[in-house]
Amino acid sequence: MAQQPEGPRAERGAETHVGTRSLDAPTLAEDLLLLLFQPDSGTIAGENTLSYVLAGAVLADLAAGEHISAAPSRMGFLNVEAVERRAPTDRILRSAWDYVAARPRGVQTVLAAIGPTLREPLLERLLTRRDLRQESRTTLGLFKTTVIVEGGNGRRARILSDVREVLAGGAEPTPRSAALSALLWGSGTLPQFDPTIPWTSEVIARAQELERGNWGAGAAAEAVTRTMTAIIAGSVLVAAAARPQG
View 1 (cartoon, rainbow, N blue to C red):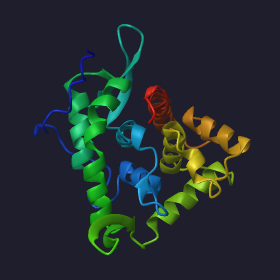
View 2 (view 1 turned 180 degrees about the vertical axis):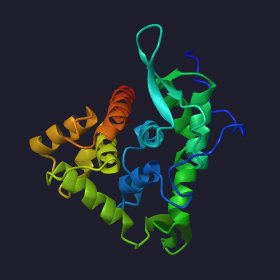
View 3 (view 1 turned 60 degrees about the vertical axis):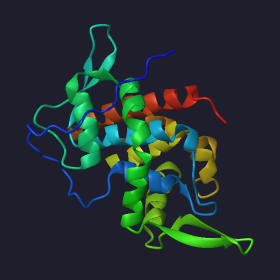
């Protein structure tokens, strides 16, 4: 039996908190989960690989905030390691940062370790923020069920529009929209967004460019973020492809 990866450790209190976002601001993983929510069916696209994809978004967020960096291992592979005294303030990001801070680890190891616990707390945040809401329905006049529906505040539509403009409209991506686009491609769910995001050879080529970290000219300061996001998105793609479907 394959050994299961060690999970994230409890939070430590010694590091200085220098998170770059307000506690009230949505994380990249929240935006990705909201984007993957399918209003017509009330389901989340790509449930089979969701843990890897959400974990990739958490790592991409940590990279964008300069909380983690990439370092070569003794075997020549790339590990991710925590940047000292750069612990994020967000609790979900902090838990992942603590896990990486214990020692440098391979991206695939981190994805497998932190991903399984992410769906529920992220979904709870979307419900609390009213991006999504729960609705009671009666089936066959007898059975009451609770379903999740879109919250009606328009945030999912705005995120989807941004990603569509990047993938299909030729818009210059921000680090956030580039990461969302790359992770959406890596998740294998992009065809499910057709026709809003048309499933064409041009869109596929654009998504692959973003997954490789080719975002356009951009600012020199974004080079590290592009590199880290490319490493993470590529690892998500490999993990998603290797995951049994069904």
